[in-house]
Length: 217
Length: 105
Image (cartoon, rainbow over all chains, first blue to last red; front, top):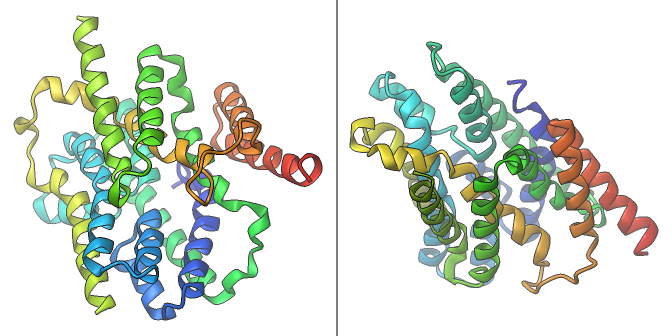
């Protein structure tokens, strides 16, 4: 829980923005809040509502959510190694709370505490803390509306929180290369349909990572 | 109708979270693939960071002297040396505010 608490600095403003945008776009408060429980994925919730209010078909909106959130497949692949002892039901339950910051902090913790049992409690802690923050924040955003002035630029806390996650890996040249490849391709593919840059660039970057691994040997 | 699409989007999202954890066993992944997975954070998060800094709300590239670029550099330097998530976020946010309210105004 303490490992993710700094991320509340970005999750809470982002949740408030997400709730406020939904209501501003003219969707019912129940619908905007329902998404926080049913989808539970910040960026994808905003994109979904923006696409629908812009006149896109629901098929396109749903596909975009799927593409944006497909990065969780990579998170799952990393985490599965540490969660393989859990029962199937527990795996099904814990999957619901695998979000960016929970993955980042728990994957780091798992890597540093490989030998310990019951590692999954860490993920339950990080994930459910973020879940509660997200619920409260989106609800607050729905109620407060555009109470939070846009000039504050609180959206900027999102890249900052992810910078904080990867910044220590800047010590390793191979990671720096992978980050640059991912970042530059995300800019190159930014206009690719359905926000697919969010999964195209990790695939390109992981391909480069596998080349680096091959060269190292 | 919108509710139905939200539910489908939710199931799809849940599937992306659950699939690799519950349906794929570790034996199904090759050693090589597992080695590559160590790069996942570095290969995913810049795709969230870069566009949020270099592309504005209208989908165009920002100017080279955009306050977000300066603030991000400060956050990276502070984060690198302090190893603290809070200092990283706050130094970036405060330098961003300083820039937009005092200098760029």
